[in-house]
Amino acid sequence: MTSPPLAVLHAEAAPALDQLTVPQVMVRLQLGRSAVYDLLRTGRLASLTLGRARRIPTHALTDFIRTRLEQEAA
Image (cartoon, rainbow, N blue to C red):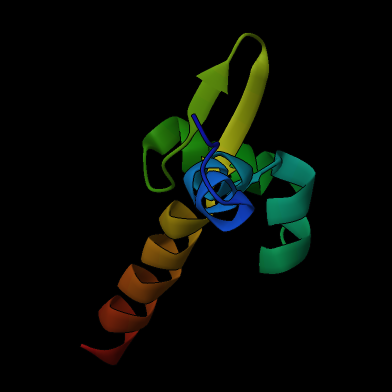
């Protein structure tokens, strides 16, 4: 039996790698730690808790930014 091509394995693993840490989100949004945790606490920015680690999916950050842009445009 042959194993799947490496590209297939990479594509399946990619979503798991699309997670950001709080410091990475701080840099991308140019916000402080407290401001990012406030967004997480209020649910305006979605996140996952893995043990004690908090991870923000990149699509959640994109959705947050898109929502903010739409709110400001209205």
